[in-house]
Image (cartoon, rainbow, N blue to C red):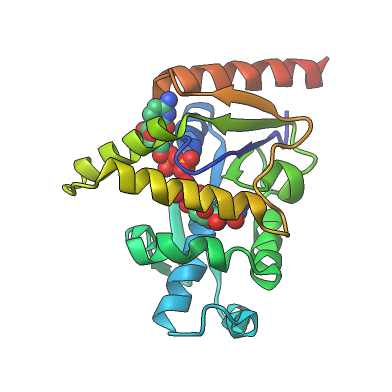
Length: 222
Ligand code: CDP
Ligand code: CDP
């Protein structure tokens, strides 16, 4: 079957990227991490030293090519995987992604990428705005403390110690900004299925979503 599209949305640290990447590899689908694209714009805003509160200063996006390909985020032909995970980027990304101009530019790129066959795209507004006609929409959630613990584990694996309470504050603040912004807020699409991974391992969540994909494909093929 050609062109099966899966949209995965949800709050920070619920597992969207890890799970989407895993499923994409297992099922031979293309994964697109849209959060990485908003992070890339934020990285450029920091590097270009623009006034980040001034929407008109983001017009540098007319001259740069941001894309996500083969599990990597690109600015032009530069891979910025590591740089986009910095604290400075994390602290400013919700501001940057609140500007209509920035969203318009990235949604255009994402919708173009979404024309590829068999894709799994994760973010905040995929089921509601980017791919409203997705064949399956998942809203992935988990308790905030559990999400912070997972982030802490990720950081420990990279050799950093981070305070759990600070992580809870950072995640809560970002979720609030993302859910309350005027344009394309983080929101469950009406036809999305909620998956709560609080008490599930990564592989259990992957298995559950693959089952949902198989049954959605079955319905479409009938
Ligand atoms: O992985 P993490 O949960 O830290 O966040 P992310 O998926 O990398 O997304 C970073 C930020 O980009 C989010 O907090 C949102 O502000 C923004 N974002 C968005 O507005 N719309 C999307 N489709 C994806 C991300
Ligand atoms: O993309 P998002 O911000 O939603 O989450 P992520 O960047 O994929 O980070 C989630 C972290 O939690 C990863 O280290 C996963 O291995 C881990 N994890 C998970 O995603 N799902 C579970 N059920 C358990 C752990």
